[in-house]
Figure 1 (cartoon, one colour):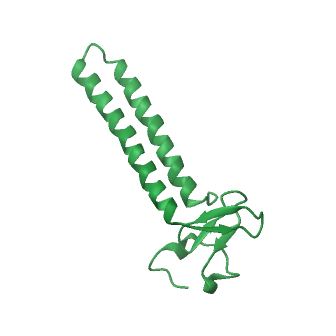
Figure 2 (cartoon, helix red, strand yellow):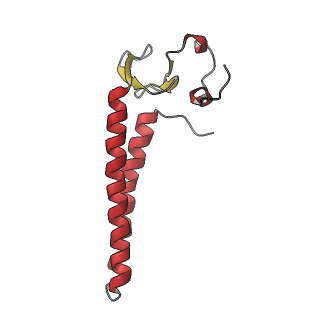
Figure 3 (tube, one colour):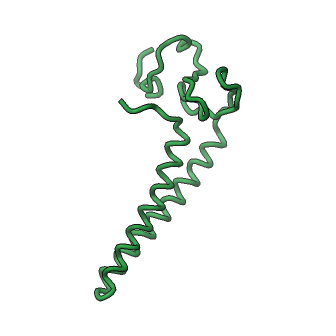
Length: 117
C-alpha cells in the first residue's frame, strides 16, 4: 500500500501534473504541422487541460480557506486538516479532531460518510 499523503498536497500535485500534461499534449501537436486540424485539436486539448488545472487550483484554494488549522503534536508546526482524519503536511503524523477516533489506528476510510466507527 502506498503511503498516505495530506489531502491538500495531493490535490495540488494533481493540478500541477495537469499543467505538465497540457504542455506535453500541445507539444505533441507541433509534430502535426502539416495537418492543421490535428494540430489544432491537440492544442485545444492542451489548453483545456491547463484551464482545468486553473480550476482545480481555484477550488483547492477556496477549500483550503475553509480548513481548520491545527498544531501538530509531533513537530509543533501548523498544518491544515480536511475531514475527520488527515496527515501533518510536514512530518506525516496522523491527526484527528474526532474524540471517538483518538488512539485508533489511522485509516483513510474514516473520512467516508458511510464508515462505521
